[in-house]
Amino acid sequence: MAPVPTPPAQPDDAPDAYVGLDAESAERRARARGWSTVRALPPGTVITMEFRSGRINFEVDAAKVTRCWVG
Image (cartoon, rainbow, N blue to C red; front, side, top):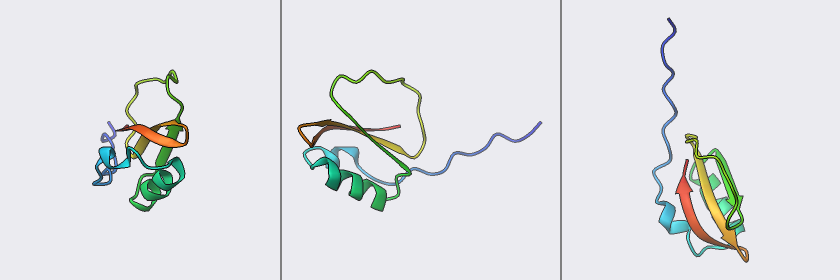
């Protein structure tokens, strides 16, 4: 049987630090800190709840990050 792959380490970053930033600045900052996937979503978007290592999510309203979470 093949070994179970080890997911890559997530960037050491605080999601709360993105709240209040404008969406473009938040995306640039996240990519510079090593997030492989940066996803911006409008409020109320229906999404699946699967966890994806290396992904950071922004809820963006009026071009500002109002919520941020990992996965």
